[in-house]
Image 1: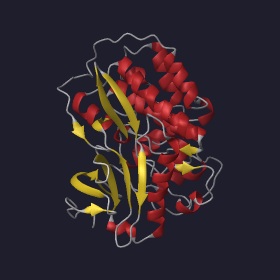
Image 2 (image 1 turned 60 degrees about the vertical axis):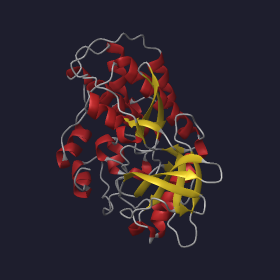
Image 3 (image 1 turned 180 degrees about the horizontal axis):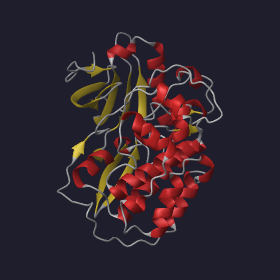
Length: 338
């Protein structure tokens, strides 16, 4: 079964009957299924056949299941099973979520009200706290990997998805799965140091991504909207000031965003806990914003919406220089913006 084949009606692993396909991404397809012995509805992610022939892709897939299953946090999608039955493609089983991705929400309705944006950010940071405490750096936090389960009255339960490129800091096998000089994650939301050497990043790269996420929610667009090589130059050499796009932003909230997006990791928050506590200390009042254009909310059953798992860029080893963020080093290794 490839990502383009119809699996509806099939029973995977003699246990999970496929009901419908929810999405397709770089690593494979996600389906809604029913666990027949329990009658429970779940989401099943099946690796693409084109990738299943290489051990490193299967190990990456297994690592996603292992990293996510380690956490058991209410703000992280729950993984309940990983199977590779004889004659079948590997697949992992997750809880089925009702709602939409943050990317879908921002594309549909524009910027969020500050109090709602802060609420989402705090839950994302709580998930990162749990991951970091267990030696896991996500490395690909972005709106498409942030899922909103509506609770009513402009409240959401946030679920962080897709730990497929997570860095397991205590795993000796992890280094073998990340190619030397590879850019891991999604460039637009990556920290400057992540573009230079994905192996050397620490939890502060996730803090940067959380800052980018918060910026997106407040401004309705990412800090850098350029593409290709110009996007890399912007990430490496400019410090976005959210006040230019959101003049009415609370000064304390603006300061938090700027600190999270500092190009130098030592100038950011030390970790997710410090950033979350800074957000909790805010006293915000929502004001009407021209960036917000609320529409009738949609309700979608999906574990990832859209399912977006960007491939790791295959690049030659970077030459070391005095500046690890040298634009010549990074641009020589960059593939087009994804």
